[in-house]
Length: 165
Image (tube, rainbow, N blue to C red; front, side, top):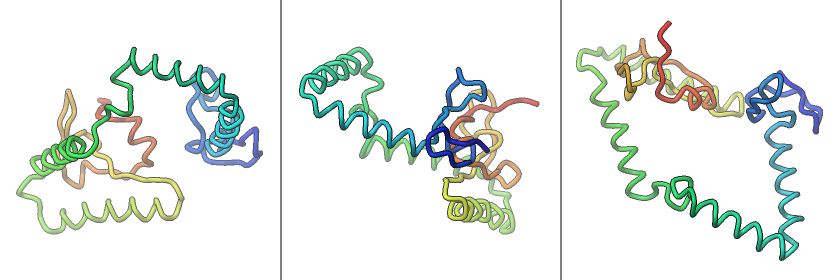
């Protein structure tokens, strides 16, 4: 738990952005306070036409120099659907045919638990594969023993890595 320096409310650590230079590795304001601050700051700044023109030029130059970071080039539509389909197919390939009905039921329970925790806590929970099914060094199976329920932030931070213990 950490207290936001702006709203002075104690919140869970997942409610704060990461900041590697801070002692605890977290930003001093919670996400909602930080978003409010940025919204207000930019609304005030963009009301000045000179600032708006300079900022638009700066952003355009950044995306020209870094085309891979441009959100307009992120996959959408059919390409995004293809990436999702590829993931689902890999999950299907990694689901062994020897799984019993009880195993399949247990796997469904992991997904239901993630949905219940999301509803109860107010932040997103996801089902994670302990050993990634699309890992670079190791490839796990889509079986109950390889599943765990994690907060979405931790799951996304883990990505497709597997730490050998």
